Length: 141
Image (tube, one colour):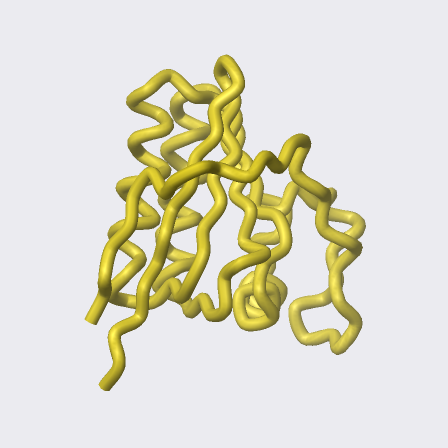
């Protein structure tokens, strides 16, 4: 079985961070996601935007990591938002009905959990610099 890899890039602007994830998020790589987002909070970041455009796959383990991070960020007085989720994650978020928590969608603009119509367009991250090197990277089995 081939190894999957997840790479985490982070760009800070004062108390805001853009975290870009690249690769696959699954049971093995979700702990790296969780640690990366917890590190933001430990570093005083209170607004966390997570760009998922380079993510090729994300299962419910990734969703669990994002929900945990959103809860921890809220407790710390901040916000966490996901941007450009892959199709698999967007579908899970839609089915579970937690788009208002992770995508910043108003409750009245969400699609029905059983609907075939997608939720409203996802917000765009406020900034998207190209990082020079990964902050965290891990080969995952």
